[in-house]
Image (cartoon, rainbow over all chains, first blue to last red; front, side):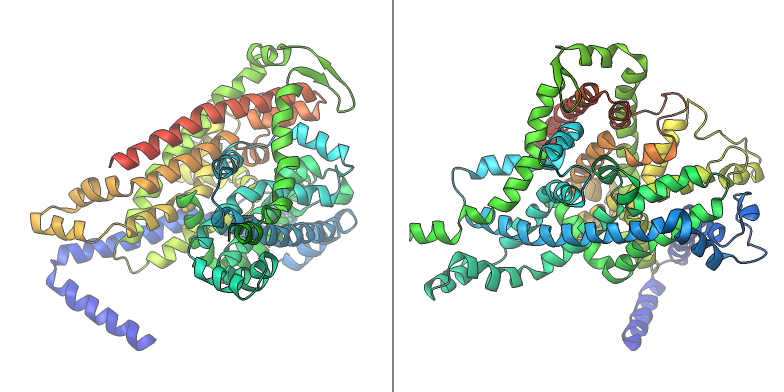
Length: 296
Length: 288
């Protein structure tokens, strides 16, 4: 791998050797400018969060970029985790349950829906497409949703919030599945049907495994969206027994007005899951977001 | 075969998702038109005609939401288009650092909006914030970013752009990479420079990417709530309230009918602006 890279470099140099020196310097300048830009605009805010999570309460009161004189990261983490009777742990548990169950439901339900909607084109198709488009564009009606959930006895419950997440992420996911289904040849279905496969077995044994790449995209994108969701837990799952990580962070904001170090530690802790997803699935996230947005 | 077809692709597969979508999303959306005409306490409602809407247009603290929502959507959308395009061009050029740059610019898209909002409101602190400190070093006067009523909304919009520009950039990157190389070759034969390449090839031919960025960030801007709520909660006073934050405040105050009227107004605005925009942009794309 490294030899290929270095030979590319040599080729690049040989080629740029023929271009004027000015252009080469220009490119180098652009690269340096780019790095400088990311340092100022992106790294400083990240650094700001991290360095303040390391400090003691007095030092973090300055809100400065200075390095801490003594490091308090572990102590800060313990304080944040133990705060309000281990609220953060409960929040992580709730957010994990919410994210995992919602994402699993989205994969199965939207996979099935996308399968039928792509294969079956009939009188209903335009209406269904329009209803999906409506869901992509229009914001949810908050209080009437609460009214519906309340009527079913699901308001302020985890299953209720899971249903909300499934409903609101359905249009986007189904579009992704529909787009991917179009690339799976119908001959596969026909062969399976001739061999005596019913629709149910065709979908679960043949189609769903073939949908694996798009399922991976749906899993990663929806996991990030739902884990980071603030507004829906705020409305549909209020109360201190039911906190999620985002609502906890928001509550801590008012609690820790004089203890910025703890607030930043909290931010740091809840950024770890998305950071891990980013490190492992960066390419897939980017590919999924562009596919979904350009086609949608 | 037709019967086999219908059985193989039975609408039963659609049912579970469709039922959830109908009950949790479509039904409340339809009901909101009714409840927006009522004084409402979940258990009980009283029909009061257009009073909620009249209130929304008369009360200064509510009316300001329209103006702010539009300003916010236009500013964030405009900046994301311009910066996304420029970064997209930069990151598709032959820079050795482009993979690094792509990752760094994209990362904020994935972090929690609340965390970003809190961190930036600390950095925008009028006396201690690092932004004003840095401006001070450069000999520039600082601003009360979130406390000054003239700039507070724009400060939030800037943070929104900071967080969202990576998304616009990746859409532009895929748009620019899908331009057939023939165009660049033709330009080279005709002897066009870098400016021609940008203005006569990249800008018109990345049109589909531009349309996606405009639609998504404009709708996102109209609906935005999290960042405003994390940074100012609509303050100082009501000067940074957007429709979504007003809905939340009215809901908290127990004015369910009024909150729902706000929701209906938000639908109408999004529909009136976004659907024609969507049509218009898609039409221009075909014309090309």
